[in-house]
Amino acid sequence: MNVIEVKGLKKSYGQVHAVRGVDLSIPAGEIFALLGPNGAGKTTTVEILEGFRSRDAGEISILGFDPQTTGHAARQWRDRIGIVLQSAADAGDLTVIETVKHFSGYYSNPRNVDEVMAAVGLEEKSGALIRNLSGGQRRRLDVALGIIGSPELLFLDEPTTGFDPEARRAFWALIEQLRGIGTTILLTTHYLDEAEALADRVAVINNGLIIEVSTPAELGGRATSQAVVSWRDGSQVKSEATDNPTAVVARLSAHFAGEIPELAVIRPSLEDIYLKMIGGVHE
Amino acid sequence: MNKIPSALNLGIRRGGLEIRQFARQRESVVFTLLFPVILLAIFGSVFKDTIAPGVTFSQYFVAGMIASGLVNTGFQSLAITIPMERDVGGLKRLRGTPMPASSYFIGKAILIAVSMIIQIALLFGFGLLFFGVEMPTEASKWLTFTWLVLLGSACSTALGIAFSIVPKSGRGASAVVSPIVIILQFFSGVFFVFTQLPTWMQQLAAIFPLKWLTQGMRSVFLPDSFAAQEVAKSWETGRTFLILALWLVIGTFFSVRKFKWDRD
Image (cartoon, rainbow over all chains, first blue to last red; front, side, top):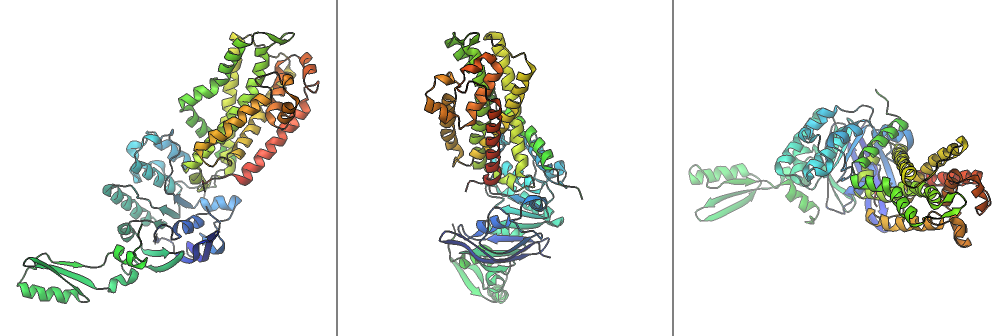
């Protein structure tokens, strides 16, 4: 059974049709990225799956539960999922360790507190008051609170916004750890390189509809699209779009009798493909 | 597989966390806990006369201060701080965990009850030492006092949580909540002798719990002979209990049904 199963999801706010019929199937253990510009219906979709918003139509099963379930069933459901929201700035007067320990008490099967602190790289800040943390440290605390309950499914909403490159790499390593223990992850991000590095599959959502679901390598025909070969010829930089870049390189190699000056073979990046798919509208 | 912790267990843990957070906000700790004492000092120094044979204004005022302390500490502080917690995303994060709403409410109730007990102890201490306030001697009066504090604290907590849905933002909450509390205090006979207020003010105040809490506290701290000077010529203890219980039910109903975890 899939961890996330969504059929015909619809949601309107008055006259605005935010989500117009979204289908999603995400199997256990998959890291799935949902991409889309602001206002595409991404946040609405995710918040419905997280149980924060109601829906107008559609069937949803998350770990076998309807997110709109209430009472004890809702607690059993939430015991098995983790949510990292876009930003929370509460509890400034508590220390990091106090907060992580307290949240661990909410779950039936919490992870070891020290292990989680180490996983997010906050051991050294363990005794610091939350209000004295930097933005990036705060974000790592958000992640710690999201994974403390050993979730089978983790929602990550733009987890690395505001991270420096080093912190992002460390975060990606943490996600790889979670992949290793079989956690299913639904990720939304604005960073296409992040989606490419982490996701098994990506979906592009625009105007309330999923345009395509694919692997990052194949999205939008990326794997079969033309490559661009560029090189320097005297004072000029030349380039050639081709379906057979190897043949072009071989030809150039023969032409220059060896090393080709400033040779580059460029495949379209995920970002190029994505921008083309959503009609060049990006932020 | 372990079981999910019970709502009561989590509520008690939330209470501990709430107290710890509160205790670290030094300015607000000092101000909240000593505010009634400061008011008693001011009013006790200004009004030196007696309002009835053997009843000093300080004695009358202690009853009003405990009653309005319950409203300030519960209703006012929760109706202001909960929208602030909501603004910064703290409530939404809690909503995403298996912790149920009832645990969050229990945690708040524990914080308010503990804060009230400390406040009352300070007020008694200063009142006895500096303002000649006399403590009741009959066991029955202490019994009334105990249920008034517990019921009043619960009622104030429930109404504070319920009212937290009204302010749109944490920033504006104080502007919405504080005037309501101050007006209620004037109307309910906290700062003035209730029977000297205009009749319409008395009648309006009788709808809300503060008037009944204040009157109930008077029944504890003033001699029984003073009951004859109340509007109803009696302490109306039974009616006080019913009205506070009714407000507790109303507050709990709206807290459970309408509580807002998210700003939009």
